[in-house]
Amino acid sequence: MNWVAAEVHFTSDNPEQTEDLVSNIFYEFGLQGVVVTEACVTGYFPLDERIDNQRHKLESALLKLKQEIKFDYQVDYSETTEEDWAESWKAFFKPERIGRRLVVKPTWELYESRPADVIIEIDPGMAFGTGTHPTTAMCLETIESYLKPGDSFLDLGTGSGILMIAAARLGAKRLVGIDKDPVAAEIAEKNMKRNDIPEEIYQVKTGNLTREIDERFDLIAANILTEVVLTLLDNLNEVVAENGTIILSGITESKRHMVHKKMAEKGILEVETRLRDSWAAIVGIIQS
Image (cartoon, rainbow, N blue to C red; front, side, top):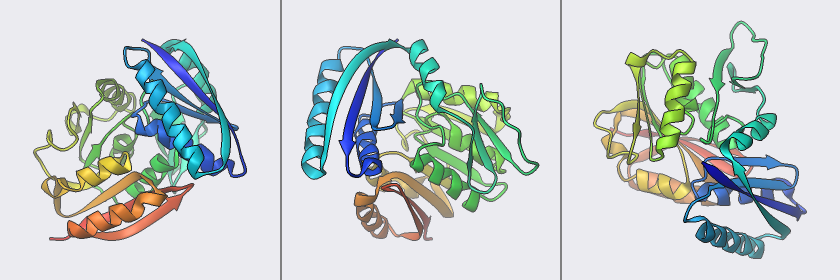
């Protein structure tokens, strides 16, 4: 498949905030590859019949953002193959320590581990989830904090499968990941095998994030868009075990109050909220 790279070059008095907000525009498109370099955010759109409409929506969203915060930008488009994208993107993905013990490393990088390290090897392909983005990093940290050995784990919007691999490495005995994107589900499956996760303890599905689930889980993670999180909260009671824990990430800091309000309406007790680089991750317990 060929892709269109949309490079948003910008100047801003607050470059970190601008990076996050422009990145969020791309994530709201459901894009599976976003690269952030100095004063530039690049998103990758599939080159298909939707591309003209996608470009129009991107430019409209950037114009709206410019009205909300002070920054200047220019968008450059170029066509690239998936192979070229993958090779160029590898330069930006290096081993990274997350939390107390977790280390996320790409398959092509060497890493000298410490005795207590929990290594997660990832080849993300075109799927979102390397551990470098604050939303993924906060999810990994909270999984490390809240998952108990023997727990069952559900990953809603699994992307590269990184959260499932972390949960398995930390002692989960039953894992299910689901993504609406079949490409992401295929990549997640490959990454599970690459990390030698036993096939009998996990399942990767494609489809609606909760309608395809017919069992209950001790720990549920959803690292997706704020609006999707709000919709999921209507159905999480049906898939979480008694006194189970939920981790909600991918939430922009400016919209976290909407998630807190919806959680309260659904009887979900907020345990913790973590903030990083304009993003929020919220941990809650379903009250029995």
